[in-house]
Image (cartoon, rainbow, N blue to C red; front, side, top):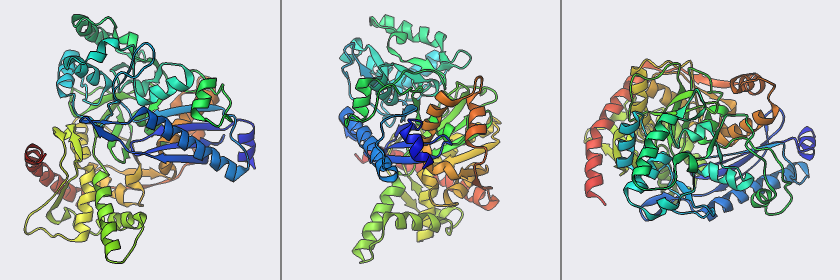
Length: 529
């Protein structure tokens, strides 16, 4: 009844996140608990050599997820969803979405998954003295200029997927600082793009004869909690074609999946960190001091309030596990033993804990796409073993679960050599769905305790809803860190797994074989097209 009253009076808050395989909408009450949800499954496309999503698929997915959420509200509470207290949208970070002055899309959306900007990323890193990963929007823009792509001269606005949806719903070309930090480097003191670096890139732009400058085309940067506009009448119809949703809902700055992951795990304070593990995996650690130098494996982004964050991002995580799970389900069905996908995943993950600590010599190179952390622009998934390896199902299962985290370990080891300290590391995402297993393997990989909260399964859309709630509910002067700790996570519960020394040693041995197998991986990329 309380939830129904909150919905009826327009006091519920909505968060939507567009992940790589699922778009999810979550409605929360005044205690920040989810009270309704809806989702839509989708997949990226490989078109003309680029990983992309078409904008018509974006809107079909967003509308479907919202419609299912509205149907959930109707089914559970007997009410139509007509009013909201606040709203926020997040999506996969980075990428390239250019538009002209009339708002027309100039080039296909280039997602984070593309690794075609190596030359641009290298040149920008040298120019700026700051690591520019291939995924970043500025790397895609620079590569388009280097390629001489005709559309570049017509760019009037460059944004991310979250920024695009927010713009269409509110009319505001704005990004939260965490999302903006995946487009261009941020000055954390000013919570804005780094002006010195802007001027350096503008010099390149001017030399090439373009009439625009970066600040002309990049979205405005906003801090968490700031006014980012309201859903317009047109935006309300775009989100809810049924016409039931009223316009005027206040919107918070749109964020990326990194920022929502930090919010959903209360990892926005210094010396906290989180690992988000799904199709891709990334770890984020809020730093207490700068790193000693630039590392190409480490991205420097920010929290939703602009604090500097070291980010290790890996393009590959659970895709190979998913592929093997599908194959094993097919085998079971062929044998006349039909099982659900959930049964297959549970069997894989639980069996992984029964495997030998080093996977018995079985090594899985789980690279579906390029992986900059290990210096590869393409991927060829491989399972490698020696003739005397113990090729048992538990060892194979453990190699799949370990292989999903090995690239992350290689990147995180750099931070540990930098003496970066982490008081709390929290995991969330599909990798941690089976209790204990993902936690224990990650704790072994990083030799660090790993916690998973009861709310971890809510994930990014819930984190986005929290940021939207902060926009309208915070007390005067209350920081995001204070709000999350006092208002959201004060009574939260979870589980913690300490690293087992034998597991740590086994994962280290596994990592060494993984690195040796990269020579074969490079040969496969070169010779198997």
